[in-house]
Length: 185
Image 1 (tube, rainbow, N blue to C red):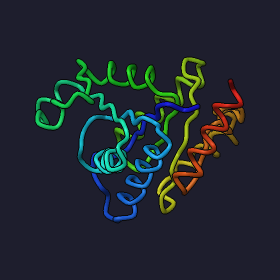
Image 2 (image 1 turned 90 degrees about the vertical axis):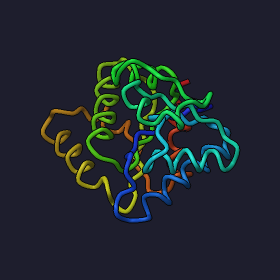
Image 3 (image 1 turned 180 degrees about the vertical axis):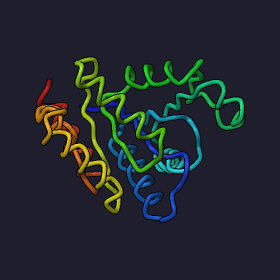
């Protein structure tokens, strides 16, 4: 059973309300299934939308936030549900340690960094958790094409590539992630 999912996503909302709607839906689906949210700790952008969805249904969230960011958001991070760490490296390590799975929502450079880092750890056998991409309105189509291209050219193994679950619906994506987790148990 999946007890905690780490969600990587933007601290911005993007320019289409569908991104916020998807983030909120994911948070609500996680709370309904009693899956804790592990996230970057801010209540801005899609991060805030996922957290709000979890909170609305009484779910649990754990924000992991570096001190240099927390100092700018002090009112948000004084809650018991936040862990303040020294830097981004410690943040990622703690997210990986606490998560049973990862879901990536639309975002920018930070989101891509987090996705590729966990994918790299997975390739090296240092992370075993399932990874899912919520492909809202085909946002990740170029990334998916890049991954497929890298596999085709022999730089990503098909064994790694098939481990990335891709869906457009939050409930279906969580179902797939939980199936992968059960199959590995």
